[in-house]
Image 1 (cartoon, one colour):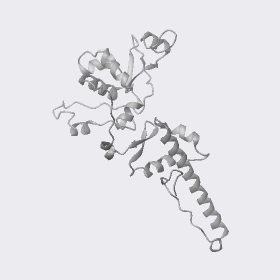
Image 2 (cartoon, one colour; image 1 turned 180 degrees about the vertical axis):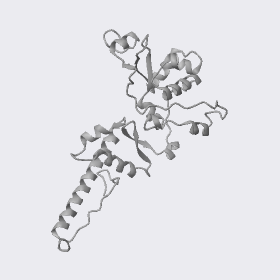
Image 3 (cartoon, rainbow, N blue to C red; image 1 turned 30 degrees about the horizontal axis):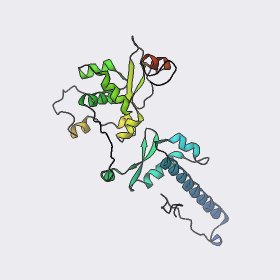
Image 4 (cartoon, helix red, strand yellow; image 1 turned 90 degrees about the horizontal axis):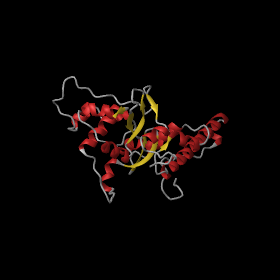
Length: 254
């Protein structure tokens, strides 16, 4: 079975001809129902495949569910598609509750992307990025306390410009400091489904990113399960954005 473009479908279902004379009426009805279910599943997979393929951004699972035929099990549909693409040149991957096609990891070296400007994060930027990823929600003062040195506004600005860091909210403490956290773009860039997929202490040691002589009482913070606001945070409002200089009084971004 092929698509209109001549490419094979991810999953082909057999539709054998059955001799009704060799089957009881109940068996024939059951076989017919099974064939209808297989066809409905195949159609749901084609729809989901098209939605993800046509989108430049990862597609949320609830958005896919809205487009599928009634009574379709979106989790089952996406799981089958994920398995169907697992051995291909592109893989279907889950990113923060959304789905996207990505080049297979073992073939990524074949893809070269030319850019007019390549900006590398400074050591300070990498340190701040790591602190935000593992300690979020975290304020600038808390970042400085962990690093032991002052953090320039420029470092945070660069991270905000990459789209990997965002202002989450404001801490319910005196001064109402802004809290920072990571974005879905951060998860997508580093191939993470959720924050809990961040490497742990053993993985970081194995990669040579942690010294073997770290203090005995050192422990890795456990990243949150999601990016929902905590009980100690208030959401960022338009007034907050104006106060921070991110919006003009008319509500337009600076």
